[in-house]
Figure: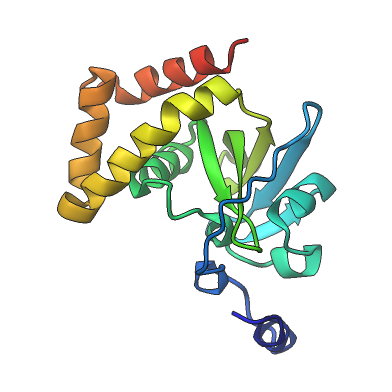
Length: 193
């Protein structure tokens, strides 16, 4: 979508979503600094209600474009859909998610993060939104997981998310009961220096 059409959409009071994300990918990585710490908050539908300066810089969208946009505007097509299904299943049930995530920048480039996403609760224990903290992931983790994510994406093309979920379990030597625990354990191991 062109800058002009994005401005028209925002001026009309409409929200940006992954439909507005760049379609032409470029192999240009934005690398977080060691002390960068991305923070964003969303409502329960995934619409961004807060983003810090580091998020704005990494994503390449300005704050006006990001606030109100669906968080999926930064979803990179190299990320398997099963990762986001697991993420949403966890946080909507009040649990936390940890993971290596490749994000899409406004210019079509990308940036990797180690994401920690947690639900926000009101005084009655109801989920009112989600908060995501992201930091620079280990290069070792990216190099290990990127080819696995691409295998999962390929599995989804031929057999949908059910196929990628089965492949993920096979790769992790896991079953339905422990696949999340094993993925989180792998993430923590890969983040160690």
